[in-house]
Image (tube, rainbow, N blue to C red; front, side, top):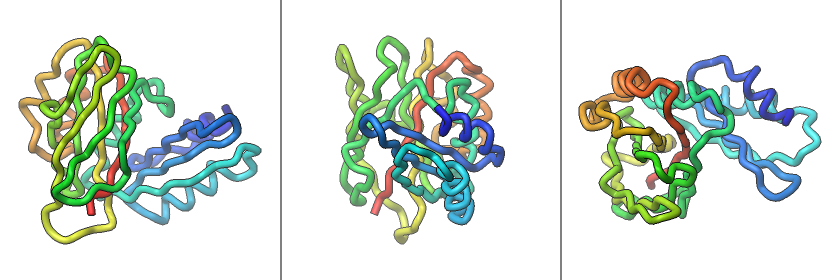
Length: 200
């Protein structure tokens, strides 16, 4: 698909992630995650210019401290098509409520769910995973610390053959050392999924 080829060739900067998703037979939703809103609009224009397919755009602003999570996800050889899907019940959650949804594609693997907040801290949400025969759901309470901001929380799902030691060892740390260590531990022997949520 032309859009996927454009994503592979145009995404050269480290803190950018484009997430294409099919919506019906002839429409695509394109999410762009970045820490700079000017880069989001410029990339949207470059990716969609002259495409015959209808594209709905969704911009997601992150904090620069979350960028190592995007860099980790982009190392997936399948990108921009990820092995895991994350379906959220809602893209916005009130502080004090629950983040609910499910992970698809990771059945039979060890699944990890991470939330990288807009201070760049990695939170391990594995204890909120609910496994059944054909899907993995989650129901995690979330709360905002401090005043509301324009930035979103980054969600990363990882499926691996074995339980990754890095998650237990470094959760609660900043994203940069966490994802450097996780990438070294699991290499390319993993499936990844990415989403985001706004906590208001």
